[in-house]
Length: 287
Ligand SMILES: Nc1ncnc2c1ncn2[C@@H]1O[C@H](COP(=O)(O)OP(=O)(O)OP(=O)(O)O)[C@@H](O)[C@H]1O
Ligand SMILES: O=C(O)C1=C[C@@H](O)[C@@H](O)[C@H](O)C1
Image 1 (cartoon, rainbow, N blue to C red):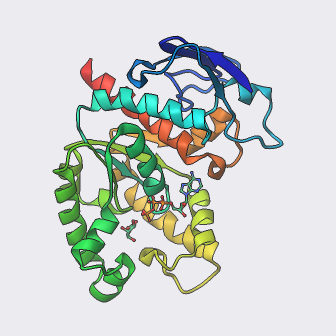
Image 2 (image 1 turned 90 degrees about the vertical axis):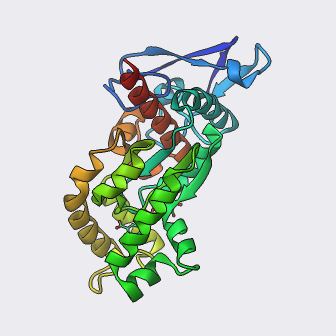
């Protein structure tokens, strides 16, 4: 564990290129780079020692991971996320942040953490549709009224949600396919959580495919049916996901922090990377 001290600006080094906490770009493990985060908004006492704890201490972890300052769900990890959240919130200037990505990619899990870091409210468009439908579940809507009907309500939900400032919205996995939905999502900024299909299928197989109507195939084991259906959906949607303003690739992120399995990346680490990529996008727009 590496202890770091700070004044009003925290400085630490990581093994990768990019800005603070960015593990996603130009990952070259031999390079070290200084990163800075402005801690003034947190109004903290000076001279506190900050411990950056590795997110995972697996048999593959080594001292390098520790020194690289990998974020995790420790108190300090959350605290750094909060500091970054304040910084990004000021660039967002009230705009919403829409998370897009395949079902099970972590939009809800990461979105809730992000809303806390940004001091934003959180909304899940699937849940909003369920509310509009008097509490009927998404799976039930698909079953009783069909996908087209659900998509109409999904667009209504996104339209309503896009009117609320300072909100993180976890969108439904298929929201990106309708151009109309992009009109609503372009009111804010969009970030694509790109999770490899194999990992998604493993995650979904673990929780069961029952609540995912588009994966409700009769044959094969849960992993195979999830993987088969996800592959088909991903082919149809990859172009649409690429319309997002920023992307967080879990494959790159895992490689950069030295994890073999993307499913081992903590939601806090992913949330940090979302903030970093969102900020990059906002800065590039300003130039
Ligand atoms: N980084 C993570 N680490 C461990 N578990 C995770 C992580 N991200 C998501 N999960 C788990 O994976 C499952 C799916 O996550 P989540 O509901 O956040 O995905 P989603 O993208 O919102 O899905 P949907 O499009 O179906 O609403 C949940 O059981 C969640 O707890
Ligand atoms: O990927 C999809 O098309 C879906 C994802 C879920 O979030 C739900 O919106 C619904 O199950 C459809």
